[in-house]
Image 1: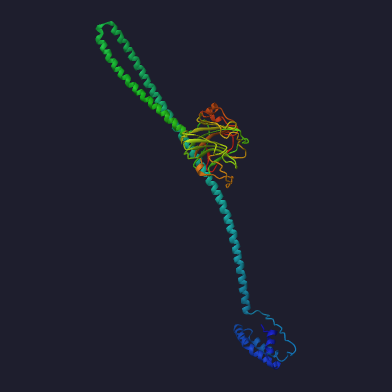
Image 2: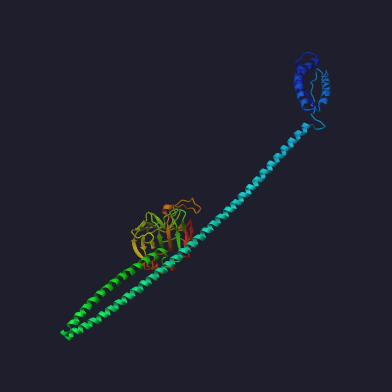
Length: 463
């Protein structure tokens, strides 16, 4: 390398002197030489190769600074490039350090890119694994549920057959007791006939008469015992059908229906949505449903239809031991008390006519309420949402555009849900409430087994 001085510095140093140019040069040397000597000493210590070349070039450098600068012309120093034809050890060392730094940066960048790609690949595989695993768990749970239901059904069928066999044995025992009673009666009648004949023959038969009387007392006692035993058997046989009937009522579907909707618990996510067969612009209607509720609170929804403007167009719900029917709003409600029994199937129907506002309620085919003047002249509008087990309460925050309250949810089973666009007659509703294949009768607006009823959440169809 070499050294150069700036023209500005030289000018300032020369301007401070009032003598000749040589005097200015001397002043310049006095100010700069200590710094140059220090720098040159450090450089010479670190570079053994350039020592002699530098010492030879120093006098030439100073000789070039003799009185060659005119007084009227400013000196502009020309920079001397710091270059060398051959690289020194330090230059090579610095180059190696720069190369190693560059390679290190490239390696770090490469490793970082590889890590990002691998992490993305691992994340994709984990998401795929979780999706497959979740589907597998769902299928396994569904299979377990189906197997459990099938196992329970088999056990229930076996118990029902056992009860039938027990009833047959009791009936056989009753027939045997009755046969014994008949035989005892016939024997007593024969002995009485003999006794009457003996009385007619005279006094010499008094001893025979006494014997017959004793036999009569003995037969009467036996006959009384047989009658008591028969009465006890009849009482037992009467209680056994009651128990079997209660068991069958709790475990089998009513009305000949093959499937039912199960609502396993009270939850705002568990309900069923219905798609009616036609537009819901109604001047009159009848809605019916078979239901077995686990627990009825102050308001437990069975059937509901509502629009965004009025969520309470049609509602049939339970209120503890009462059933409530609403048309056109919460202010138009009719209640029938003490008709709900928890844990037992019940057939509930409600009808309404816009002409005179006539509302009727039925429980198990019997009319329990009949009222006039409920929302007369009103028309049920189309475009609403129809559900089982929940009500549309006017908010729109879920994916279905509705929100629910778990306190209004239904828990239990439903079947035989039907809706007509007319008021059914009392005899037709009584026929619907029969428990022998009345599920084949379906409504023209909603027909059980025909209309699409989609369960949501944990609701599901069961046999």
